[in-house]
Image: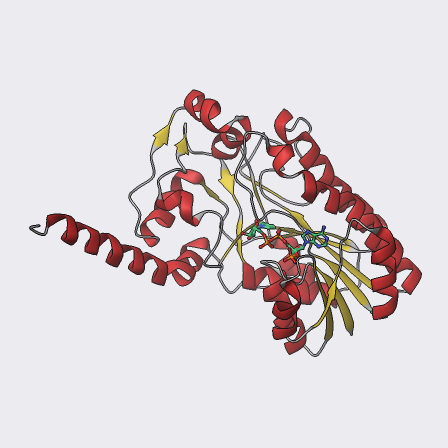
Length: 326
Ligand SMILES: NC(=O)c1ccc[n+]([C@@H]2O[C@H](COP(=O)([O-])OP(=O)(O)OC[C@H]3O[C@@H](n4cnc5c(N)ncnc54)[C@H](OP(=O)(O)O)[C@@H]3O)[C@@H](O)[C@H]2O)c1
């Protein structure tokens, strides 16, 4: 197939393009920033500069590419730091999820594209009641934390508009597996605490596993929503100490809810204490997907072991230096 990947230069795009090519597809990959073209070309795809918020440009790019399939992987999350003003942090991504999806769907329809796959998100969205793990058929949180209302609505928009149009929505878990993952620095600096009971559940997925599920989704004929997460949704109090250890960091701090609320906002409190995880049974059953890293336990170790030993070497050297006589 000729596959048009919007967002080919991002965290998931750069893992996906080589897997698509290995599976025998030709890939046209878009980037937004000027430096992206070389990155996309080096992955083996034909690069196209594109702003997904410009519908005319999207139409032109998709029609010119004459693809059989379109995959929407564009987000704008590189500076994701302020969780207190969550919707503000996600504003551009929310536009990519609404306007970007609309533009790609319209262009795909006009170009006679047969397959459409879009990125969505599985963690922190489920109703905060009942058991710790939810399926695609379970209710999403009917009253999201106010600071993330627009973000929750934008994700629902992708889920609904893409599946209504006959496409496939992949609700990925929280990504990990790259040297610049967003969790690494906060965990190393002990800025990521266990909040309250630490019972909030996260579903993770290794980037390579997320890419593998996406390649399989392309071959799948039925429209719908799929959780692409690993086999072990886990509470923060379980996974965070393991991650800190793998990274060679000190164990995480414990914050009471009120302190976390004051410092980081209600969204962080919800994620740390009430969030529910997601089941991957449907993706396994219907897409024939099996994650290589069934648990974040193995995945963190594989992805970060070398970073952790580097950290231990650096801090060991720092201790020796500070003890050396001047
Ligand atoms: N499920 C998850 O946990 C999840 C999901 C998404 C991202 N993240 C995390 O967020 C961090 C940042 O993600 P990222 O590295 O993928 O970067 P990103 O800034 O989110 O960019 C993703 C892709 O979208 C493209 N893009 C951005 N704005 C666009 C626009 N207006 N029109 C068209 N394309 C646009 C980017 O192009 P350029 O590269 O040219 O800017 C890139 O190809 C990573 O650590 C990642 O793991 C996590």
